[in-house]
Image 1 (tube, rainbow, N blue to C red):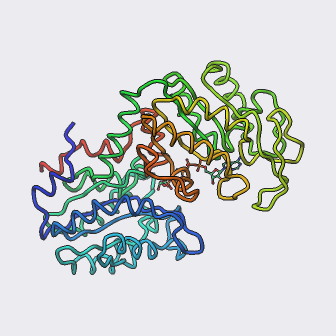
Image 2 (cartoon, protein in one colour; image 1 turned 90 degrees about the vertical axis):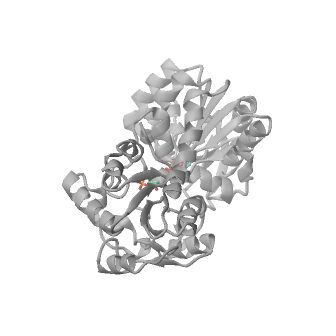
Image 3 (cartoon, rainbow, N blue to C red; image 1 turned 180 degrees about the horizontal axis):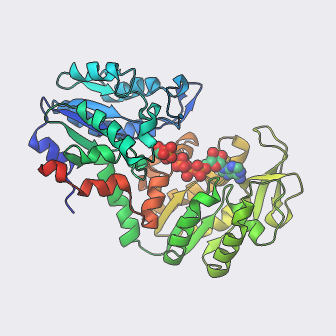
Length: 409
Ligand SMILES: Nc1ncnc2c1ncn2[C@@H]1O[C@H](COP(=O)(O)OP(=O)(O)OP(=O)(O)O)[C@@H](O)[C@H]1O
Ligand SMILES: O=C(O)[C@H](O)COP(=O)(O)O
């Protein structure tokens, strides 16, 4: 498998060529303001290196999940501005994805210019299940690069999606792995091939259904699997406990029961929870044992005893992968579990452990809670993508890079 790197493209020379870069600039927004620019900051070096080398750079990216039509609330305008600040150069924003404005702007680019296309998911063909529809959009994206064009895949957070700007376009242009994708793959490979023991995985977040496959894949390979966040209540219910009105995926209870039977020694669940009488920042709260969540109350964070137990294991781990917050960290009253677990991971890292944070929300939690980013060995830009990589699934946006027919043609 030959995957060409950004460095190889730069060595070939990009001056005067148009390079299409797929980045993951899907950042959280609140009232149109970016609350965490991590993905923009991580994407800037590849775009900057190409622009500095004289390429005409066109960036394709998505924001949120628009329904295949323009939606002003999901415009990339704030992202273009922030990316420009990061690159210290003007980033133009096209008014569409492959329409007249994008075409005219692409044709007018000069060396070192950066053009961000409007949210690529405003085009319904981007996410279409119909190969022909996606390929048609991919042809229009590739056409923006004109003669001598190239494609750089740098949106690690989206490489698990078989979408036009991630997968199909890579088959139409000489393709290269961007610096961010290369780094992410290198780091995650260390977790799958040479993890030092004890190896602990911490999973939280809200959807147990999304993470069951990764639990199934990782449980036999790790020493400890800590489960917190909204997903722990389906496991607690599988142990026969009452979980009040906590998040519960009833259809998953049997599967969780089966996992608990098979991996009883590996899986660690909370022993206490911070319960609330409503899902709000100023709810009434009480800390209760996991065996005694009152009717009508919902667990919104793991409790202090759970944090102590989780921390005792995590402090001694040599490899740690963490995906998903332990509680509703966005509300200060329910942030202590996430903070406590994160601090133990930082402590383990300072003693030599290799730690990776994967997941948009977990990475945002690290920054929003003011934890030191350099306290972790690596903060991945990919949530679903890093989980699917660890599950051993094929990632379309990576495997397509091995198909270098376009580069040889
Ligand atoms: N006990 C809980 N009840 C309800 N929601 C919770 C609970 N604990 C955590 N959450 C919510 O889970 C959300 C994060 O879940 P998610 O599974 O999306 O995390 P992630 O994998 O880090 O993110 P991403 O999928 O964006 O990469 C947060 O918004 C948090 O508030
Ligand atoms: O936020 C993410 O995990 C990536 O940007 C992918 O977004 P998606 O889950 O909407 O495809």
